[in-house]
Length: 328
Image (cartoon, rainbow, N blue to C red; front, side, top):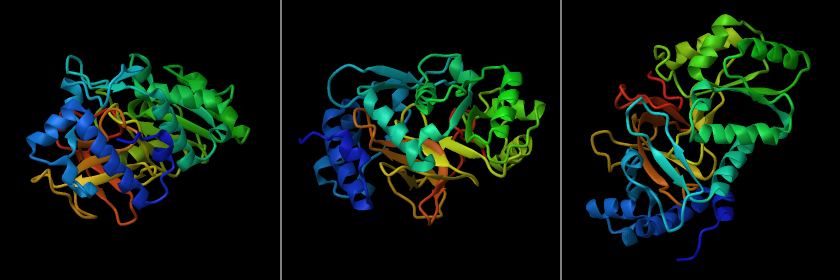
């Protein structure tokens, strides 16, 4: 099979480009990924007969907890791991080519927000900093470095310093993104009120068992009031993916051109639903070239007519994912 290059993935310009490359990657992974190959065969799928992305089987994301999901040979450059609950099995994502992840989050950020050098990047991510193997920390590290801004950096529990920094950056009329795990943003907003309308608050990571889960509207209302902003941005990503979707407010997420969301019927997982119907979220992430690009998650959502999607909760509320998945 002809090799698939990163340039093909990140130069997608149309739906036709996406579907053609998705089918090509499916053909490769159905042969070269032992777990995915076994899974498709168990479903009775003839991979060579697949000619539309709606026919592609989606691997349940839970397989990353029990199997090594890898396409092709070689050894991983890094293994990203999920946070998970204490004692529960972690997802492990072997990343064979880190440059794919770096290109994906870099180009994804610029697709939605423009040049990283225009921003000061502040991060309030205690739960992620306190463990190893976080793909989010790897991404934020790189964004902080790429911003080429001496004020960019992490704030663990030093909220006083963060408060002073935000006031100073506001006075200097700087463009600022504060990326924070949800419970830490709430903790800060309750203790330090600030009126910074131009500030971009990007929440990710949920409550991590630190606070009661809130519906999105209630959470965003509290954060808007605490930071003096009109809307809250969110990131939709996870250990098992190398790409992220973003919401600039209102809970509507969009994907970069190499990532796509499909909605499956909760009663018939092999059937897809139309726009506006609530079901399970399937993700196609073409940057997952060396693992599996076709994953079925335990997240509930719906597609909107403008191509955006909403996250509406999870199948099992007892296993809340640490990636911005709030129950609604």
